Length: 461
Ligand SMILES: Cc1cc2nc3c(=O)[nH]c(=O)nc-3n(C[C@H](O)[C@H](O)[C@H](O)COP(=O)(O)OP(=O)(O)OC[C@H]3O[C@@H](n4cnc5c(N)ncnc54)[C@H](O)[C@@H]3O)c2cc1C
Image 1: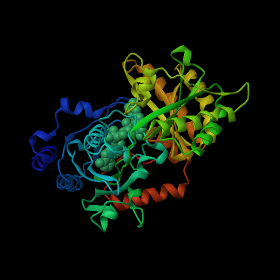
Image 2: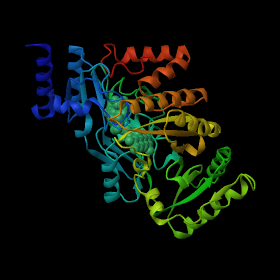
Image 3: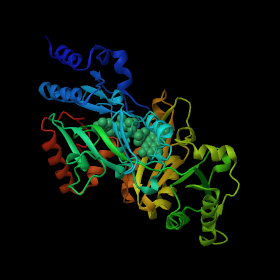
Image 4: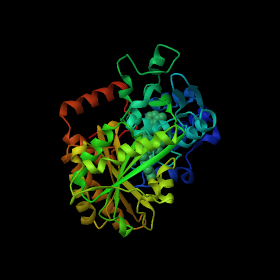
């Protein structure tokens, strides 16, 4: 039996014939995503149901020295689940059990394939007083995929989503099943500590250090009412001060900022949307009143911030939707390609990023469109530079790629860091990184994954 047949048959023995494929028509979808990454080769896809099956796949991959790439929803748009060196894609979506909700310590234990939409509906139906921080991503994105890349969501003021992680179960690249967090010493998955923070060995690594099979995620009270306060300015220099004043009130659940050049009436305006919540009309009105005073304290008669008192109900509805409307807000062009550079940066760098982002978009013949999220009470901002392009037009794809390269360069120059970095951005980051830090990353990787089978090609510099 040839090696390919042996690997295929072994995968069938592990997961069952219906859940393994090496047929081009099944592999097609796994070899590409919605961004600018060129399709790459995938040899097999397998959809395990249990941690033991994942473990057997990992042991097989070591024995046969075949790469494996764990995949959740595959929705980062940055090619992170398209294998760089072929091999097996492990599609985690069948591991979709919501195992336990703890109402007193407020956490949920889920398997790695549970989607954002499934968790949200489960909580709404069974635990209406609880919620998780829901990203704007399409709801089929997995909760775990998002936790592992430092995603952010509707409760961004409580921290980024990786900060809401209490613990994980992970299959190490050499096949051991390992618990991280309080679940390593107790039946309760309530916290990561007080222990050395080993979750950091798996967060931000793009599936290169292990396969997470379960996670415990913090839940938060869900108040009865949600509403929003919307500000606009034409001067990005005012933004850091406005954000400081908003976060000083400690009233926001989420703070988003955006600008887009189409439709025409939006051009030149930076919008700041603050999502608030409360248990009564009185509480909501009080928050609106306090936040409504912020414009008076910012800028002057020429450079001002305006409170938009009347938000058209249809727009408000879309802002308050869960997940909100990111996917429709982007300026999708004919051909349906879309990718964005999310640069994590300090708030004071936002005005310069804004101005130079417009220059980059125009230099590459694109319209400027950004959607930004303020995180953790203003400790950092995810500045999302959005580029849409016609996927059927190679020149247009190339333009978007170049614009992203320039944007990542700008982000690093401003002291920021590209988020969920594609291969090109990983290289740009590593070039700028303290060489000792990169050496440490390489040592950690070698220690955990001695045969280099886990999503190889990523974080290699
Ligand atoms: C329109 C749009 C809006 C978006 N808005 C947001 C937003 O508001 N907030 C936000 O955070 N993101 C957003 N995103 C980005 C992205 O879709 C989300 O972060 C999404 O949650 C990623 O989850 P996923 O399941 O698609 O991850 P994947 O793309 O499947 O995986 C991400 C990385 O984690 C690894 N991985 C996945 N599962 C495992 C596992 N079980 N074990 C080990 N490694 C694993 C993969 O190998 C990959 O490197 C948006 C995307 C789109 C298209």
